Amino acid sequence: MTQLTLTEKIQGNVARSVNPLGLQQMMVNQIKTVVDHGAYMGAKHALILGGSSSYGLASRITAAFGTGAATLSVGYERPPRPDFLGTAGWWNQVFFKQVADKAGILAENVNADVFLPATKRDVIAAIKEKFGGQIDLLVYSIAAPKRQNPTDPDEVWRSVIKPLGEPVTDDTLDLEHERLVSTTLDPATAAEVAATNHVMGGEDWELWVHTLQAAGVLADNFKTILFSYEGPRVTAPIYHDGTLGQAKRAAEASGRRLQAELAPTGGEALVSVNRSVTTKASVVIPGFSRYCMALYQVEQALGGHEQPIDHIDRLFRDMVYGTHREMDSRGRLRPDARELATTVQDAVEALMPQITHANFTTDLPGYQQFRQEFRQLNGFGVAGVPNVMAADEFDNLSF
Image (cartoon, rainbow, N blue to C red; front, side, top):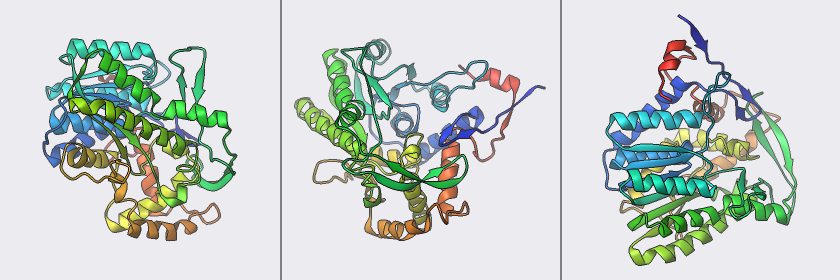
């Protein structure tokens, strides 16, 4: 029998290969996490923008298998072709739908650029045709490198990860060579700040809500939530005080405007400040991986490490639809409070000076956790799953 060897390839901090069987098992594991926590009252018809990975995928899983919600997910992924097995997010969408179908839970996927007006039209058509004409939850979980101007197709905004005012130098992880390297980023220009706000701020979130509202597909008591990030003191120069932090604050302003518009019909616009996790996007932020290694090591010792599915299931179960909301003075949900607790951050700040390019070692428990989570994003390093599959096994996977 012909076999396919699934070789893991990492270039810099970018994974260039996938193991579909590992991703399939990861899907089963995440669903089990939600099911084991039991059912809760929540959404019935949910639209997940960015539902193919990380926080968006976790939101879809907890909505479907925690509340029985029908879900429509928009992701922008590359499918398999003869010389390429496809992206992890593409397989996540496929496997989610397979499991949901077997459980009798409606699940539809749209593979398209979330920013395009045509995608919004296609989603509205799907809501009217297959989702009873209305949704009661919209999750906005988008981290993108660029966005086309919806009113001028010739203009493309590109987001940048840069500090403001002064250059920032930090040690960051090179996963391909398993080493830390020193990286210096120059400050962003005003044009770069504006472009990053267009991509990573709340403009498109507002546009989605307004477009859906105009189409009459929002239910009374409709909720929408955008995922934000604050981060600790040690990453503030590159994140909170940089271009991404500026964009997140613009998104929060969008949330306040949407809240005022939705409140009269019992609706709600929420911003959730989520914890630090290993994602394809976060791993390229200078200094962030070094912080995560220290954080994960501290959390392992304290017994409080959460992966996206744990974090998001708790967020929806306890805060969005539950009675245990943790909110800050700006009205934002703060499920990241556990990470930012003084006892955790003091221990992290004590550990970080020991993790530098001069003394870095792969024996660190925090590094091993970080690398394992990164590998599992693409289906490698999953317990019980080999890196070999029969050719007919691949052919039998649903496309």
